[in-house]
Image (cartoon, rainbow, N blue to C red; front, side, top):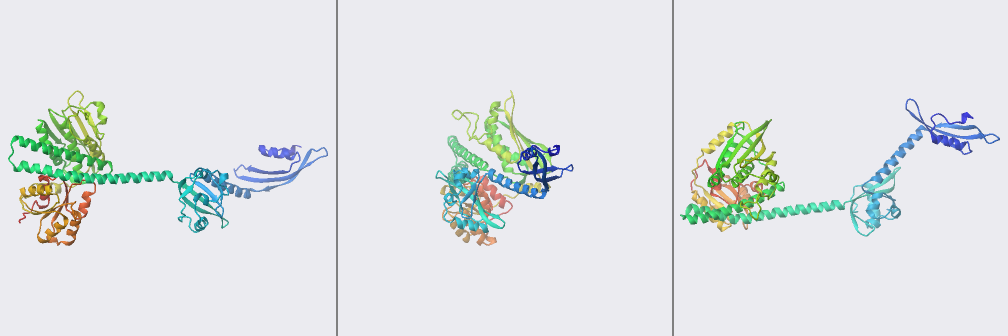
Length: 586
């Protein structure tokens, strides 16, 4: 009977099958045979066992059939089914299968979570009960032609009664070229909708914030223009005794302090919102440092402090970057050092850290002999609104934004900023790096600078001022007349147009916000309708200082943009820019 024993390498299943056949059960068995070349063959064994008179198995009669081809087809089908089942089971979206009438056949686990019904409860239920639509059959029929069609199924009713917002896709089930049902794939977008609402709310808040800042900038800067401008005129045109000079000086200092606070808040807001962009222009870094020091020399002299600066020979004559932003950082840091230094002075040193390709990394160091900084407070220095002394007892004015703004500007310019204490020695050193582009050739810029320095400054211009505020009218008129110019006034854009029709003006200072017709609209009309020989230079004057204002003004046809409060030096600089080499006569 050994020939009835199981073949070599036969598994436990085949052994049990043979054992059952020897007990009189039918013999049906599929066998997977792996050959030495690792090819696989599937065999099907079918037969009957013959028993002797004592009931012992003596022979097996049957056939062995090669079913490899059929088995491979079955395995591929099984793989397809299992892939579909896994996709349906583990899908993050609800998948519901329907018959042709829209009745639910089956669903996955996510369908249970989305609807609150178990799969057993869903089976046989009409989908219209969940989606609340009366034209479900029409929607299903239309999906046969276009699965992407808007099906208007935007929500599903939960078992507990509330609606769940969804995005749905309907896909037909096609078997043997025949539509036998549909799949509905529903994605719960409740959280996404909340995020979208939060995003829209934040954007709306930012727009409101920008509008508020623009309004506050205009409303505060306009009267500040009058305060600072009139104090300038008062000090220049009136013989004041020492006590009166002190009063005027206090008024001006208070006005400038308020203006600095406004500038800091607007600057920080623009940087925080990501709306600050850098201007890449060639400039002379030595001239920039010199101008910056000149701006602060009077402040240093008043405290009896010395100021010195140096620029390494390794720094090229011309670099390309945002000169105004670099100057702003220097002013903030030097001004901060002057604020906390009471003896000795401040030294500014500019050197080249490294040069790579067409870029140069510049390192600036501002050292002072002031009160210094405790090491444990250094990490907090660049935080917004942080100040070393407590606000209830502090002696130093300011918003606490200067260093925070400096850090963000330095970051924008590809650099870093840090503090180096002097240990037991007095004072502290602020250092920062910025990345600038190299410019070639340098000769032309040097010639331009020298030419500008020797430009003819004598001219008398016909100037028209568009300004509706009476105080500002007086301020700007007096400033321009003291520079020797003939000045006419207009209170709105329409009046500007009328005056330009009857007289030729060299220059128009145009306030943006005026009643009846604003300055931007008036400028567009001037550029569109006036002949070239009657076209004046137009300079925007605005109390706003927000991102986009300058671009908007220049896009409308204006030649330059300045912000209030106006100063005589700023007006003279703008005039010199456009008329420095000309001699204009009334």
